[in-house]
Image 1 (cartoon, rainbow, N blue to C red):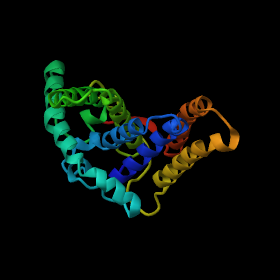
Image 2 (cartoon, one colour; image 1 turned 90 degrees about the vertical axis):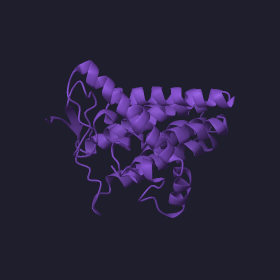
Image 3 (cartoon, rainbow, N blue to C red; image 1 turned 30 degrees about the vertical axis):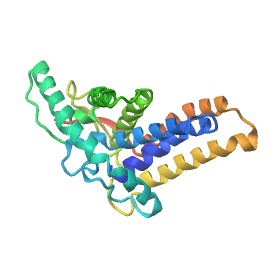
Length: 247
């Protein structure tokens, strides 16, 4: 998917999950979680030289929403080049040596796999821990950022799974891909935008529910935790996601 679609879907999903806890959640923690998902939603594309994470600007993000997102996007190149040169390339070399297979750097390769994004999140968190320690800054919020970054990466993979190119989740151990039928270009392809609206509307409903129904944050949080995967499964069905094998 396009960068703006990744950001919209990932942030809407995250907001749906944390909206029930908004009245009791520390605003700083909420901001860290959203920022972590924001960066993570674009991080797997660091294996492509023309990715949004290198540009400091998210193409396709328009209006006031685009202005806000692009305001935060100025820091993306720092993460993008760190991931590409200090994480992605070294990890590729490690897998090359361990698996004794030829490895060709390509888009939707190692960084579009579960092991790839998991290791990327761990290594990036390690780099940040070293920097924060050197600066004398507490590491209190680093675990939250690391988990949110990983969640954003996983959401990126789920979103790309819905496209024809698909994702090989177990790469480099398996090349079997899951792919759907969502096209990232074209005026007739409205599924990503429509689903983002559904997620945002559900999140808004979670925000107002305590005032309308008197429901507790715990009950709404459980509903969001169950409902969010269900919504994504429905979207994947609408996207006609299937398993396929590509060489």
